[in-house]
Length: 144
Image 1: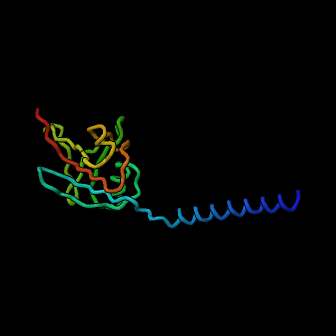
Image 2 (image 1 turned 135 degrees about the horizontal axis):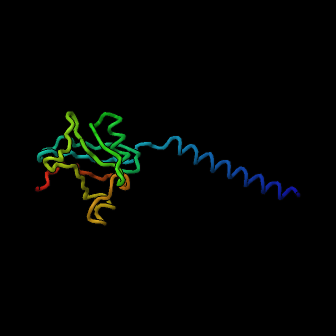
Image 3 (image 1 turned 90 degrees about the vertical axis):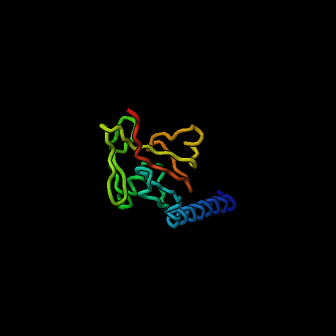
């Protein structure tokens, strides 16, 4: 190899090292809570919880699990064949579903792209969240 080829190879290696270093630095120092998601919990037509949560969660299920772990909310759920199935929610008190009274948890969003494009929200495990999304969880009584 001649001197010119060696210089070109050295320049390319140096460029790759610099780009890799900058990328790694940004990844280490990026804001881990890059989304602000509003979560509202409604029981008997009353808000029992309404807060905006900063998160880096990718799905609604991940956000809810994170909020439970951080003790922002109380949450009971089961893993069903369709994903996360919410059986209880609340802030200071856990409000549970009541199958005998046909009371179940539902959630909606007027801001999430997946929910608005489909006219319904998919399961929490499949629902991708984005900055400034709002989700309303409601304990609903269905007619018997």
